Image (cartoon, rainbow, N blue to C red; front, top):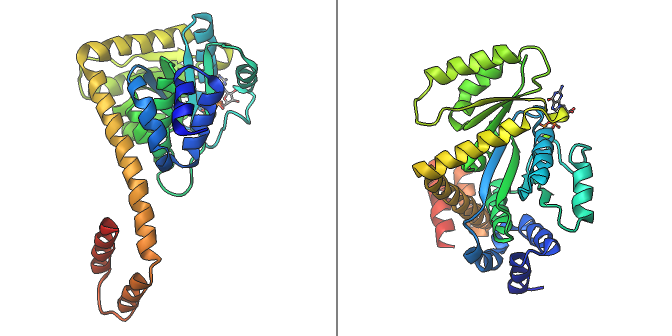
Length: 314
Ligand SMILES: Nc1nc2c(ncn2[C@@H]2O[C@H](COP(=O)(O)OP(=O)(O)O)[C@@H](O)[C@H]2O)c(=O)[nH]1
Ligand SMILES: [Mg+2]
């Protein structure tokens, strides 16, 4: 099926076509320019929620519980799961929902797990394209599950319209991790596993951090959840709704969408440039330049400049 035909079916809400489009762009995000262009007029309506936190924090369980609520409330919600260490397809957590989703007529949810292409760009190139496909397919809510700090795709999740940071009680170093970077990106804090000791201590630590942090007109809420028992999920959806209302009223949503677009375009351009750099590096001409480096006739910086110049001309 060509791009235009596939796009038309995605836009018409055909789930199989959407799955196929996602597979196509997962294989090579740089090769789907035509498909994305055909989808473009139908994008710009969905609302993205990033769910981030350390492996094991309970993100997948939480997403599953959010979906249960979404189904009950007829809130049509799609999920992109980008956590490579706990692919949804392998886990029992969303496994049942995945099977239900596959068998489904329209359950009002759509779940997709995506893995990074290890060669360049990875999920930061794929994710925005996937979000746009879901958007064009008419999914009004897109939840993006990803692992926490230090991952290349984090920047993309920071550009979600609302970012939920998931923590657990009793980890001790939690608050340090929050200070080290998650503080700035959190629109909502979730203390998941609130059935374990230490939830109120963690809450107090977070409150203290928030009070000492930068002051904005959004007060970051702290929601306690017990994801595997479905507790606290009404409150979590309410916190997401409240942040969305704030984002829409304050103009924050426009800024986030712009940042998302910038990061997406940069990731794609990075892939294209990476391919050019590799091509120049593999050329006979550049091999001769590497010989001069080995003979001590030029410096690394000289070759770096030469490579960048040659790649930009390629
Ligand atoms: N006690 C407790 N365990 C939980 C809770 N939420 C998730 N878990 C468990 O924590 C483990 C990791 O959950 P998972 O959702 O895979 O974490 P992820 O790596 O962040 O996606 C699983 O064994 C879950 O059953 C919770 O609220 N309380
Ligand atoms: Mg997970």
